[in-house]
Length: 374
Image (cartoon, rainbow, N blue to C red; front, side):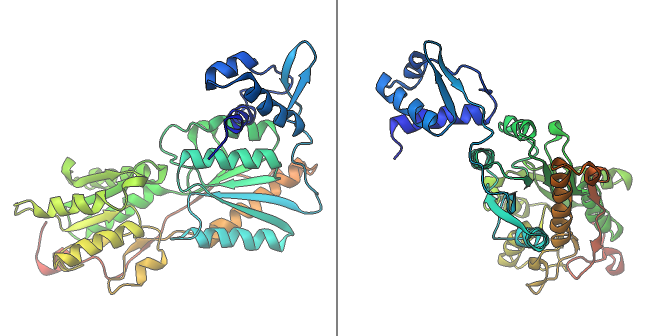
């Protein structure tokens, strides 16, 4: 359990790291902090004393307490450069391949790598960014947290820029920052998923999309665009959206409800946000003795190892995985070189957009060949 003075201390430190307090700016008075946290003056002075001893704050006799210059805080030996990799997940799905690609490339070039996991949670992301700003890493590769919704940690990224710490974003990006990024054309990927099914004669197509990440909203946009391009009407009930914390429960429950409807116009195909979701939905179909692709076609996204481990091999959109990791490592190294006095290193650094590729396997069926229309 945190002590009262540690809560006050971390609050002040957080305000320094998010840029609220800038060097040489006076911080809140002892009385203001006492009132905010309902603590004694002794508690506030303990918190401030810790930060003064650590070099975060300086006391000026008769004037108050000020934010210190932070050039020397957390500095470390520069015999080896350190790159931080921040991912929404580290140990599952496609993330190990991306991270391994980056780690291999960086270690080969004598860089040290520090890994951080946000679990796609803004508070976790905040804590990670505070650590990175404290220890002054040389560069950052980051997968944004809940990139489709307003992010409360934007100030931390602005503080990275102010501290001259280069960063790039992978898989998605925070649009307001306009950062260098490496992404897939997810709108086109969603389009290809859906167009493939339409070209096989499917017209009643369910779409499941995670919409707190930019990837999901763009894949949904592609799903809608494919319907419009091919003049196929879209039922509003055919689109299921969910957020990160709902991924295990909501999509399977919604699919159960759709399949329970006493309608003769049952869906014949499903577009999935990713392979992880496809496996969850496939389990629902198995329990109901609904066969893939004979009864329902299924299309995944990311071409992960999950796409080939079951008896149903998923038609899919390929993700570059380790290649994306290597490209990210190469890009951040160029930016670090530029920061360290080699400006020509950054001249050719540009954002990368991978074009999606459809991989056709046995999870989709051509309805026209068997005389069925959806």
